Image 1 (cartoon, one colour):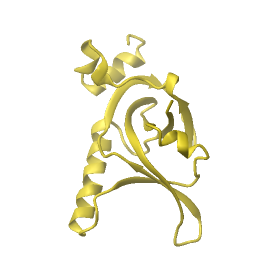
Image 2: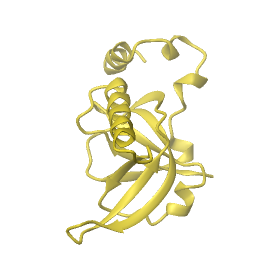
Image 3: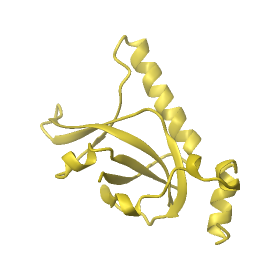
Image 4: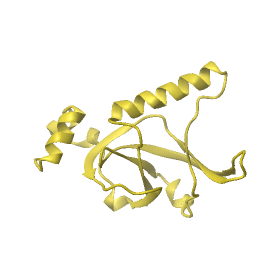
Length: 145
């Protein structure tokens, strides 16, 4: 059973912002003739990396709710130029919107058990899957979703 991570998506106001940021980073890597790999660097190394790489994802909290996920492809500890230990989370560049779940702010990342992970919106067979993200967010805030 996979294990997941939850992390705040600081600076993004929407899933489209996150997708634009990823596209920009991949384009910049291609322009510098580097391999276009999408990774997120964090300070702490997950101790349960084996479980994370068994089909786990990084779930992004955007504007107070878990809103999207990316599949985890790698967890690589390294030491940066300043001698500080870090961890590179290699992610699939595809962002999958999920059924929104409220989440309060926190620092770093948290583990998320598979049973508690929200399902992808693409698997939902009602109007939520085609509803624009701002409308979903507003209805969720009003307690109507």
